[in-house]
Image (cartoon, rainbow over all chains, first blue to last red; front, side):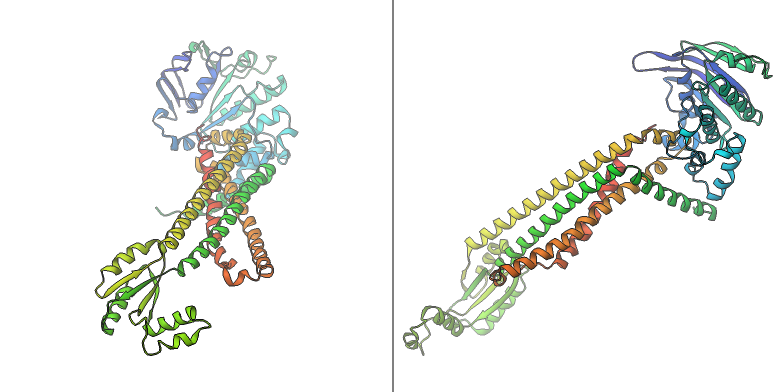
Length: 231
Length: 311
């Protein structure tokens, strides 16, 4: 599903953000990528979204070498990869419904599909009742749910979450992680970048640890959700 | 490739969505949009003012050009047939607007009217002996006085032509004035267009920087450049359209009011100069302004956006 082969990303200042990383994520997996600030986690997400080009090495997503994708093909590629950010990145002047529908409008979906899919997705993330609210009228957790609904509306095979609980309190963070777990159980490959080790430990999933741009540990999880660990 | 009905429906709904978004953008950025429209309107208004003044000057120069004639005199004892042949040769020339034959008798009548005014008895002495017997001629009026010298050298070579009279000073002055007018018009129009493009591009840049976050979100979700661009292009085109319609309407009324004022106030001018009617001016000004307005709006938004699409 996702494969990195000897990927290095060196910035112009000569800093190695990612240094010779090789890893393989299988379809349907739930993977945490952890590490301190500046360890190269966010650069990895940017490489997977083709927001950045690797200095060397190859990146495969959905079986495709994304280094071979042209600028024109990037939109189509990104439609198959849902993405959620720490700061939600919602359109502030549009309500919940429009924010989610936006992802369908972008792919030029017909109105009938938008009308059918958006309420369904809002129910899935538990926000059906708040479809007319503006982002600023929602809590952080609710805003992140909107972002998740938007990321999933086009039914991507992969969901990348870059610090999805970074701006949330413990209770909301927990709710979001449960939602991601549900999404994963329905077959979507989920990759979560975080530095919240309490959540990582509680979830018992595969954990890839990065330090100074290199993978220092890749630990398989037991898979079961330990909801009794406090976060 | 044929599009399916489903694809057609979705592209119509996308088009309508982008159209709505374009108008929403204008409303959301009221101040920027107003500034852009005002800039565009000011440029088109100035362009219109300059075009109207320039066209009227051109018309006056053209009227003056028509008064400048070249006179062709014939060799002594030339036959009528040869005179007719010379007339046909003149008529074939592109630079000739019109020409007329003045017989020796007509030439003498004209001369008499001017130089023997009040002394008609003295003129009677020449009753049977026309002093201008060899003065039959063709009066040629040119379409463009700058081509006078070409025509004169052609005429001088014609068989049966004795002499060609021309007004070189008048021709040169008018030609110089005409070229000066053309240079100034082109220069001012280029400056105005450049100023309009610069200001529109600046306004769009400010508008885009406000919405940079929105563009980045669109790109992450998988929007094509075309989809991101569409509302901004709609915005640019609408701003350009409104920004050119307003000054056109204004100019139409101002132009008519000025013409009316000049005709009423300076009646003596009426016989000397003629102004171009508003309809004739706007026949050119309306399409040019609309194309410029829409074109600048379109190009301004497209070029400016290009820099922000590489996410």
